[in-house]
Length: 612
Ligand code: ADP
Image (cartoon, rainbow, N blue to C red):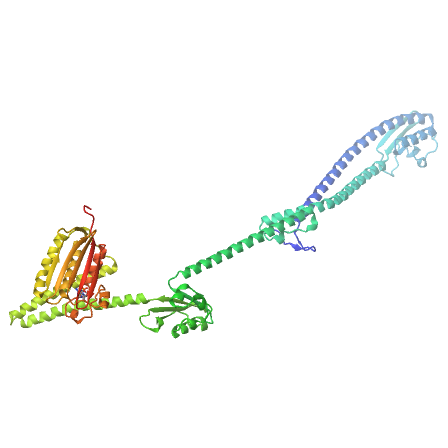
């Protein structure tokens, strides 16, 4: 169903089309019309029926009256009592409401008539005219005609006709009466309808509004009805008002909730930005900071409140960063990000900061964003990687160069002098071992750095390892004229761990002590079990080291600056690997040393409880 548009009423409310009311009125009128027409038709039919019955009754009565009048007239005409006959005819016509009542002799002469003026034969003639009576031609034919037979005189005709006018008039009067009643009833109904309509208008309007609402009209203003249409209309308008107020309240609540959600969201965003390890700065077009997170303040070593609303130049000194920010926020010259790396505090060693400057959105150059990162460690790692590659290459290249040189020498001079050949092959053999060890060490270091080094959990029988160690290095110590002493307890524990790796770590410590102890010196390996710890002291009276060397001793590829160290072959990987391996077993290696006086390396390892 279509809802017709609404129009403004003078009262300011909105008026609906009131089709219901119109329909109601139309239906009412049709019902009343049909009722009245039915009433009229029924009455008309009844009247017709009644009139026919009446006519028939009157006809019957006229027949009877006519028959008796005819008998009477025959007698009176035979006796010549014309005057009496005329009186009876007039009386009968009056009593029976006859329009016409007359006696006509043959030849058409009227001897008696209800209307005396129409009598054409005053006296009965002596000679009775023969033939049939001829009725006058004027007027409607009489409905009743009686033939009179007058003895000894002849025949005559009694003609009778009732008064038609009377029944017609009464019929039309009745019809007019019914019509009047109908019109009166209609008028009364109209008056009644006007009264009822005043009461119904509000209800109809409310019904219209309800239908409009059901068909999608949700604007409350459009559903208002004229308040002058009764209490229902006013109640409806009140209800709409309450609904409007409720809707407003709901809308307000929703807006409030949305705002609250946004505020919470912004808060969360702020918290999240504050939790970032990178610094974040938002700059307006005038290069003043509108947002600074805590990391940015920390990295730029400034107070956050001082940075907020301050010009970028007050907390970033590097011109390149300022220019990039100006381009991003100011003149729209920059659409992409600019990366600037700045030495912290303008000096090396103070760390490196990376500034990533970009517009917040590519199409919006009004706000710039600066992300600040501390890439000091990243840089150090990169450098360490480069150093490692360079050092590893160097460590590999040295034995390879030696192998190549001595191979060439062996090829050139070895055939002439077997002693040279032997010496060359011996050196090549040593360098091959060295190369093999270095490659193994580099692989171990790579494993350590990748965190993939694993250690086995075998039984490590120290009573087997230390005698082997002593046997391995005794010859070397003797050759170098260094006194090597092992002080072992009567009973050595069995450890849990990777036998080979622990053995290598001990080898490294004892080997270093011998390597860096000149002839005439001493190397002592003292082993003891202290509660649940194995403690191995490897001390020597060698070259020792400076405090700075001691601090970097366990870094990979690190070798002391001492020129005496450079004379000894080594890669600077042994200690780094040894300490990591021991730490993986839950132990540690520490060192005490004094330049030119000697060093003591102490290795500790956990001893499992007996029977474990
Ligand atoms: P390498 O001995 O192959 O150079 P290491 O990692 O075993 O590598 O040792 C690293 C450095 O520690 C050595 O180069 C040396 O400078 C120093 N160092 C190790 N052991 C001793 C020691 N007993 N006495 C003096 N310096 C030592």
